[in-house]
Length: 227
Image 1 (cartoon, rainbow, N blue to C red):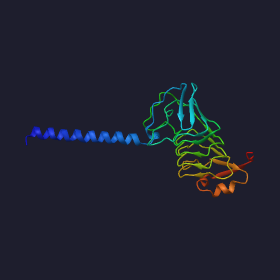
Image 2: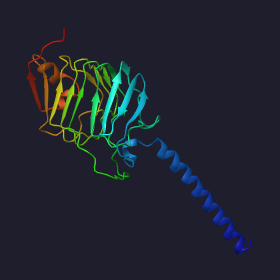
Image 3: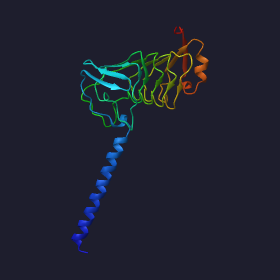
Image 4: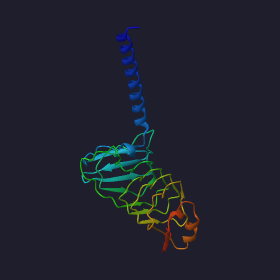
């Protein structure tokens, strides 16, 4: 076989390998966790999306409001990120009536491949209303700026890694006198000085509950049952 022919064959083989690798990379990236990909952040504007039985609205000030009677859609590796994921958001408002916070719904848009076009605002607190029954996995993952989370008294299940990577948490307030069932790795990155606040006479139940024992500090507060 002539040398020129061998070179052409070698080049063809290399190009085929590169094409296969590119195809594999494209497929891999389409299934990679959204918090690892990141995105270019769009400026706030008046927009609206439907998410399951809820409506999600973003106003020109960057306030994202979830309203409706029922569950949000779940997002993640196989179904993609929520449509508001790459928008500039200054605050989250979850209204009474929402029953499920979707998986990956508020996962941080920052990741090693992100490129921010503007400074992101600090969202340091979030309140889960009493109507919410469940919080999907990775719902608030990697929200490094979150310091205070208030979990409504209707929540009975919190999915895997829902608050994973929330490394600035100082206070978690759980209004349910019965500890919600929680998945693994929810509070794995919990700061050692973070404190859990629970209703009166619930402290021992929380201390014995799986996952909640990650808190070194658990304190009671006066609790008024809902009528």
